[in-house]
Amino acid sequence: MSATAHRLLARLPGRSVLSRAALAGLFACTLIHVVGAVPAAAQTGVIGLLEMPEVFGAGGPCAPFEPSVVPIHARPGSREAVGEIFVSRPASGVTSDGMACTAGPVVTVRVGAREGFLPVDEHAYEEVSAIVVERAPGWYRIRTGLQPDSGWVRASPRMRFRSLAALLTEGLTHLEPEWDGRVWDRPFGTARVVAPPPPGDAGEPPPTDAPAVSVREVVLRRGVWWARVETIPDVCNGDRLPPTSARVQGWIRVFGPDGRRQVWFSPRGC
Image (cartoon, rainbow, N blue to C red; front, side, top):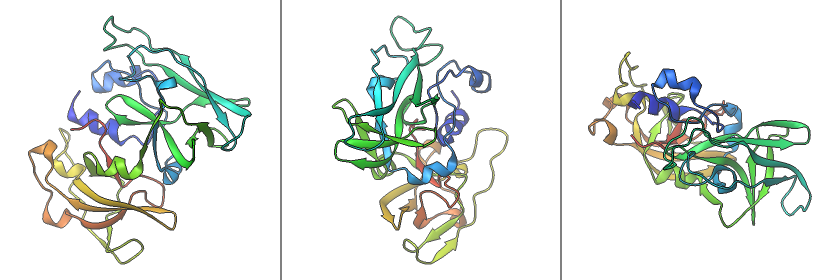
């Protein structure tokens, strides 16, 4: 897959585990899943991602596993389930070594009479997690994509939670095209506008299309996530830097006022 395809997929705000057939022609590949976007406004409440091997498996969408149902509760500690998350269709066309398949599993969420695809996001290449908006001891509140748009699931020993701070500080991170150009001296302090990088051409995007940054710190202030960032050489593009006018050092909002990401990590690497 080209670097352009990787970047386009990495920039999707949220995904459901579906067939990638619709994207195969565009990206000239036969790998699986993606699509079914989470509403942009829903992203503002994100506090992290939750691996759920019960419905996603482990080791990628083609790896064989025995799925189980994950109950959804209206509140933490509740014994009565109001819905469930389950695999409505297993992966198909899986090769004998489990390394490839024509379609990944379809993960469905059902609450009452409402049903849809579970909103997910990638935490690693082709490996997805549920989107967490709140935590309580032994419980996680995740996006459902339905109305109401969240429900509680009980933690299991197999689940793994990755906080927003860990996601942004432990891997490759970049500024998103939706970044508004504002850099603050401190959260809710004084902002200045940094000149946007030049647009890419019809070929591979230049390194300034998604400027690489190092996230030094992530904090929550008055309900808003902030990241202290600094432009760094882009290891995926020959360690090049954007023009001086487009470099940043300071605080930016992780999610803009419209809920879209302004800085994010690259689960697929370069």
